[in-house]
Image (cartoon, rainbow, N blue to C red; front, side):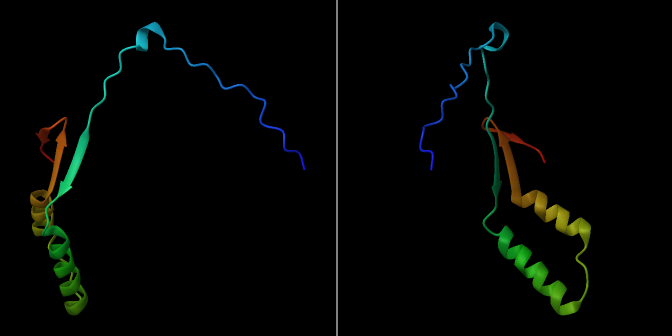
Length: 77
């Protein structure tokens, strides 16, 4: 069995002059505490009744429950 270490040198990365300044953006998604309970209730009622939920109502509550922010500033979903 050959136990020699890998002899390939690691590539040297040098920043190009046009890409030295990098900006990073932080995007966060948060979910309301009650959203999982809401989805559990909707799923349970769908299983019990055999009906589909009303898409408009579900979308309304999803938009209320999920919040997004980019660099600390709220973003409308």
